[in-house]
Image 1 (cartoon, rainbow, N blue to C red):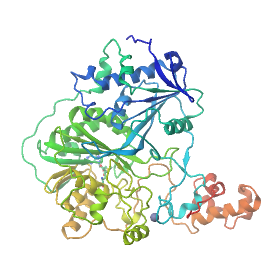
Image 2: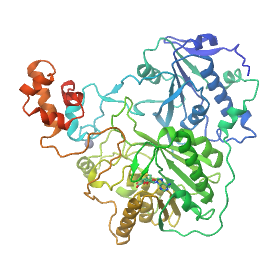
Image 3: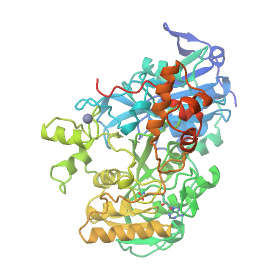
Image 4: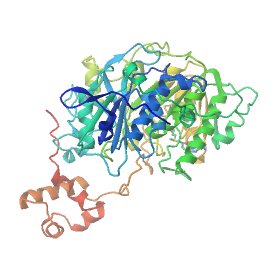
Length: 585
Ligand SMILES: C[S@@+](CC[C@H](N)C(=O)[O-])C[C@H]1O[C@@H](n2cnc3c(N)ncnc32)[C@H](O)[C@@H]1O
Ligand SMILES: [Zn+2]
């Protein structure tokens, strides 16, 4: 393939914009590329028109830039729905590192789906190693003045320089039409430094992109943008609603007739080696994706002609599966669910994409701020008026705000930050990756109507089907694990008896949704906090962090407690390196 390299390329230095030949770009160690804001119609392409599409052109240029240059990192900024295509064409020397959702200053309401409030950033790197630590100040609740995120009794372990950033950037926000947003440039630089030379290129200008037109058609690239899909065997019949089935989804689908499901909400295993009873999800990447495509095909087949599908997954698999889905169905919207993660990595993994597709060209049911089932009240608000930024979810504070009639809500957009992951054991059923009830409720309320058939082929302990039942939808739930299936049955029984299957269970959970290493749960005779603060007190007295023998000699408690209760010395002494948080400002 030959490329016309006699191009002028926009280059942004720290001081001003100027033009530079391509050789200069290839000498940079960090490349930040601003993609154009293609809308969802512009990524709707078929194999016939693909080679003429803007999408194809952008993919070609992006890949070209990744092949000609030798940067250590290459970063793209643009609409989230464009990033899966960049992911699929980027040169193999780069590895995918991170997908970030960035809050927009202004919500775009000219959208046939939920108003758009985010833009995406994808980071690839050709080197090993992780990001630099970038911290951002804690956010404090506008009402109770405590941290918006509830750290429980762990505030003594926090730091005065703030918290690590997550993969949802709400602390810096940009305008959708910003070409070279300064805040993003400096954050990317801080994350990836040392950067000797950074080049920022904008592909927003179409004329400028035209200069990149390439001479030959790259069929491999086209296949990635328009992946082949195979015809699916059809099954005749009519469907029954309100059933729960214990079995392998792929087997059970063989009995579900074509065009019978109104809505599918699917929260599949994420291939993160989580143990779901006997089923462990640790396939090879290739096997996992092939497996996903086989049940995605079945969802497509069983959906009615105007059926809707939402997929909840981690960013990597959402990026991988997006072009395949787009090839079969019509993309409607990309919801970012900020689930507030744990600081297990330099960039806290906090978000899950919720991809929404329809089998027909439009979505027929779209209850945006108008659901006659809930006239008003908390339930209606929770669905259509989420908590505004800067308010906590502590029930004491929420009650106070309700009494004082404080306006703490905003309009629903496609950035959901008010639903936290289920952490407390008292609300848990014995399942490692429970979906919060509120999440299922919002999705089902907005995208279905009473009597619709709602399907979840990875139903776990029944969150989807229970919410569907509660909202008078019909449901079909499939779950491979016998024990989860039985839990879902008994919870549905509670529902039919008029009880709440989501009320506090106070059950002892043996599995949690943490996939990183944890010390085995145990009862401590002396709380960990007391031990860690004792080490801190000793450090203050000594004027340095104690050694093991100093702790043995001067510590208040026998050394055995420290060794039994913590993973390593770093954890024993962590409080000595932390300032602790002053709760109220
Ligand atoms: C992410 S969890 C879903 C949790 C569910 N949303 C809830 O809140 O309970 C995925 C579920 O898929 C189930 N599963 C895995 N492979 C399956 C298969 N082939 N067929 C049906 N279910 C399967 C697992 O046992 C697990 O319960
Ligand atoms: Zn508060």
